[in-house]
Image (cartoon, rainbow, N blue to C red; front, side, top):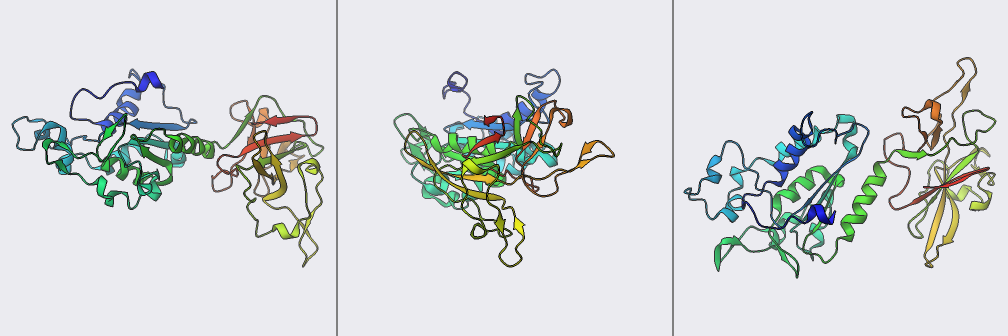
Length: 358
């Protein structure tokens, strides 16, 4: 990554990072293009920009942006001072969405290391939390009074001087929680690194295993449990249909036969979506809470000789012969497509004879 990103800051003053990304993922991703084969239907796609200036992709209807004799100001400030000459942000939103099918929009992730002020919380984070960023004083486009050929910077540090990335923030706002923004002026970019990792994990629908799991007597369900270890001592999300108050204490040691949870009004047993298993302490002394994830039952159809669809919401198992890619899968998706697992969590698959850490 260090080699790929070390491009310097010299070159053409008409910077067009959004148009470049669209071209890289459309024309150049077609057969015979530089990026042919890059796009795959089943793959996540991360788009990452690292820049100290805003996007200045011009509209095809306004070639005067490039006319050195046009009274539009110096080349370095023209795009920022005349946004009406640029391609609308909605054009790029539409083009980038078309890279994936309507059913695969959750496979798009955007990272932007740009010139937002490093000390402005309103401008750091996911796009759905940046609603007030464009109103931050440092994000306003202002010519430098001492040098009209340049803008006043939006942020500066020992290694970067950057300018208001208003169009990047607009793009992030359009893509909401799928886009993450941090400052190129920050000494480090931990928010973006951890945030992108979490977004990618959220979008992985399950775990591909190296081998099939041992089957249980039911023929469809392996004799296994899935344990989620949370990032810190957070609580396991309570299930209104089977709240924690109905469940006796349980631990990771008795997950194959935990004491049942019982509805006190009916006496019927229930299984919570996540069941508290207490806490563990890692080697660094940090306490983490563990949750038992509910297993969705699949019944065996003796007449057809196949397993049916999951009968309730929870994780389920697809053996090699049932999966589309010849890989044994643990599915960790909810019915709405969201991940069962919280960002930053670790998942352990514990079987009667095998334990797999993923």
